[in-house]
Image (cartoon, rainbow, N blue to C red; front, top):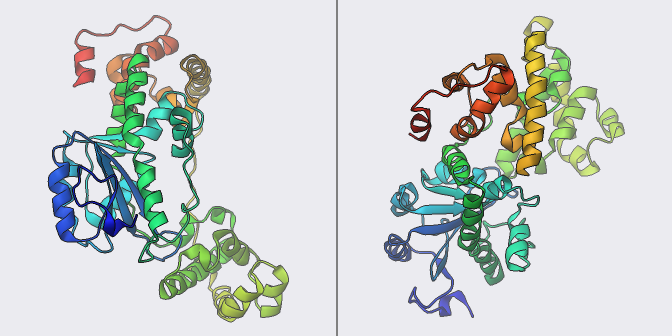
Length: 401
């Protein structure tokens, strides 16, 4: 059945495309009474220079809609729904979605529950949505449209159906996960992580120098680093002109290898085999000219890659790091959670440097969570200080506030 033939009564239809402002307003009025909503996005990052949200899928009780923001340009009516603390918004692997909704529409999310995070804190090995749907509902999600161009219009009916299917299991998953998390006394852990995750935002794109985003650039000489920055700026301009992602012009690894070899003629560039014949024919001449020009930059004008020098740690700190890692690994096995989820290496190093003597001392440690302090604070203090941990009265009240 086509989308147009679907019953217009929201109560009776299983899935509906929202492609006009009037439909969006009717949907927003309907969704306001819901207490829990599943949300997913489709974007076009693989097909265009500037990525954008192309579909927003939302599900609730007896309701499953696909919103087309390329047709409905004003989504401000949805902002109060996403902002409300009283409506739980369920995402799966929400980091990208949160950033994208804020970047494109200024949408701020409160009341987030991320089912992928929940799966991680339950110690589930495979936390992809398809794996979870198979595990709990014995249903195979078709992923064949995952890498399709979601900006094309009109969208084929089967792609709309695919998008709607991705979101309709989220509410069912939450019911399962919340029960399991409560049994393991970890629900508060996940809720705290979700609250922190809901505040992520996109960094400004394409900040200079561009080479800071290229893995391995720090190993180049200043002369070759200058070449790399110049050809990266060239690729950026071409990608923008052609409205294509950077990697579809020339990928990062090839850009790094071109800078490293810095060929000063087309023949030498061809012999490197770094680029395809087509890429050489399209971009070769300009690349060679850019390389030759930047190899002539005076020594005192060359860029220097910023090196982060780690301070030498005292033996006592190294001993604490070793003890904390052994404790963490034992705990992760006991709790059946990945070690990095329980307490990552960066946090272990920070704890070892601060060497907390009391529960209150943990609050000066960056990025530590309340649940980590509540659950493990006294244990960590006792580990680092054999005399034990005296938890002051009122600390539990403080941690819960």
